[in-house]
Image (cartoon, rainbow over all chains, first blue to last red; front, top):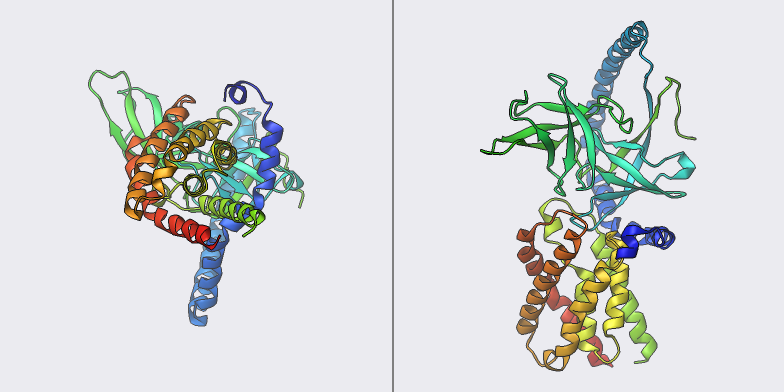
Length: 257
Length: 157
């Protein structure tokens, strides 16, 4: 145990077993995939038509919103250039699928079906449709391991959307909870406040939803208040995720295919 | 039944336990998920103590370390220690009724979960002792299936 903690002697063995256990992970997700397949097979044609119509309408709405976003992004870019700001972020994404999850309550990790073949790199942010999920911590040829933001060893710089107040959100080993550390009792923070990534540290791109404040506890005599956050992402339910490729010089980088 | 059949049955049981351990679940189901690998180890040690002992428990513990992505050695130590108890008591346990063996497994899993949490706390991983009883209860509920399978397997022999 001490050798594992203080040396990297076991890394090759762990890497070998990560690859060897991939078929076991695949077998373990068969019931979930069967459930999705059977839902598709058993659903009525009329239900599928209704869903298809709804998705087309949603797609149209989102396209309209993207056009508006493009206009705002261009305006943002012009303002940054006026301010001589150097850090311009352009993001591109790659869709990935969850192929396994850690069975331990204490370790919140996921296996995803993209690896070095798709230019995935260590530290790469991962999103679901609702918000930030975590980051890649190990990359193999055709799969990777991602650490979720709810893992107790994970921390992410965040800011409150309402007033820009910065803090750090830490995982708690609970899929539904994050917490803010070292928040002053006089800080302007309220229940319901939305938190987004602040981009500090350069690991996560700025502006992605992280969660919202659900509870603030003032303990008498304590120097800091305790702030609980519920993650925006569906941490333990999302199956399809997005790998974010970021470039700091404004140029686009992205997946190989 | 040949010894190779016993070996094959053991490998299949470990593989099946690994798959069940890795089946993704969410929310409270994660707490209620039994420790299938440990249950299989306990089962083989109770019903085949002369063949499968501490070494087998330690090897399965190593596999559990890799599956759980825990620091190498945590589950080796845990499985070896927990496995030593049924190994020592196996002469009596085979004569226990199913209910008594369930109760034994329930107590053993409580001990195992306490020990696991204590070991993980050395790495400053947050632990929650409130889930231990639920986890042990889930293991005790699943135990009769493993127990009866192993009894049938040994009778065939």
